[in-house]
Length: 127
Image (tube, rainbow, N blue to C red; front, side, top):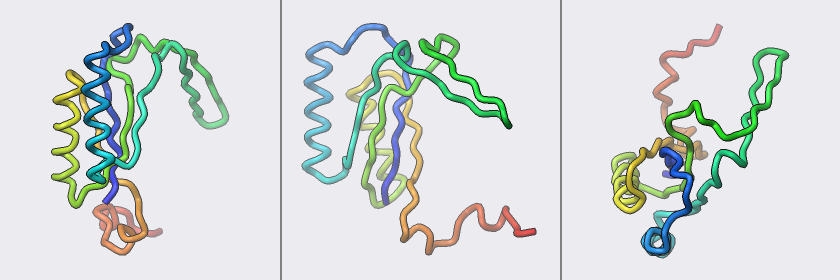
């Protein structure tokens, strides 16, 4: 199973130290070699970003920084795990290196997952 892990944290306003970069680099290298890490990227500060929103016919674009948000997505990873529990353990391993923040974990759609009964299938009834 593949999972998307979105790392949310409070923007520090300073780049990571060389020691922090080295520790994260070692974890990323370990993950790729072991096969549980399929892809990962960090995000630049929100001051360089934008939010695009649509509500009916109305569209708005807001430039960063996003000071109203307590936590922002600081990066993401695509994980390969045999279960949700294993993916949670991988997030714990990441947070031990990254520090404060949280990982929102979402299973990604795969063809094999479509064969399994959906937990939402009983809630949504066709009209």
